Length: 391
Image (cartoon, rainbow, N blue to C red; front, side, top):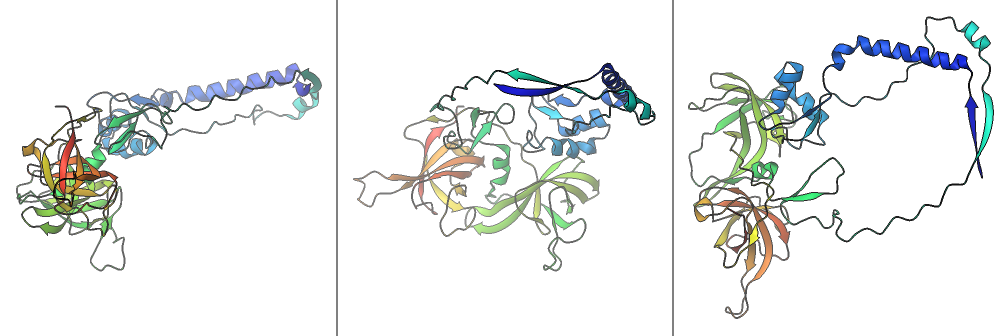
């Protein structure tokens, strides 16, 4: 039998507790104005963090405050989804209110309050706890997530329920693409606002997340406050396909004066630095939570080039193929990279890797390497469509 010691207090102690409760209640009533503001907002269709900040704080430029409180819910501050619960104030630790007012002479009170009476109560021993059942083989874990460029965690934080999402916004904007020789409306980043962040590069400046940059817009541009721009590096040129575009971040316009634009870095994929280019942010048509379905005799194409030059291409690399929107390629389609047989066609080609399409242009597409089995991801390697997104 286990023994538990408890303390039994007199009515004077209970009176002191009631007085403390009254003091706490009075403080709460005095703070009634702040308590009228809700602590949680449920997102509805069409809302942005900009709108929510203006509604509750009267200033839309305070939207980063809401984003920083809800980084466990909001992956990218540009996009929030209906049904998400966003906290408007950070969680505060519980404050302990003293049970004895500071402006009351407590000398006499201590004299009349008797010491607590110690009472020992014998409790029965705790009942034995049955061991938990073994885990189910179908329970999702980090080792058996569904295939794809991304598996989205749904529900509250810590929920074990995963749903397949073929392409996420971050993958779409970070993938990069080939210019295909198009004359795009490029803007130029002039400099980061403030001191250069890399001291050993004279004349060079870069900006971190939430830093500001100065941009010179093209003559035909009509930028407005709140517009989003994709910051990119124009790297090497691929013959017949234009330049390789490597995104470095997303900025949001804060101020416009003629062709001079000041913007804030809201998303970073790499180093945002001067002499980079900027382009109005392309619309992302979210394919939703649907999965691509297997097909036979899918379209055949070739790898044009990898986005980045690696000695050995690996998983999560981006490669460009010579099939695009004009060929019916859509976001989320799956292609396998083939290694031709050396035996004059008597042995079928083998699959060495799987690509998931995360960006599509007219004549080309960007594929994200989600699985690699062997070497063979190289310029000119054949690819075949094996799973197609429902139309």
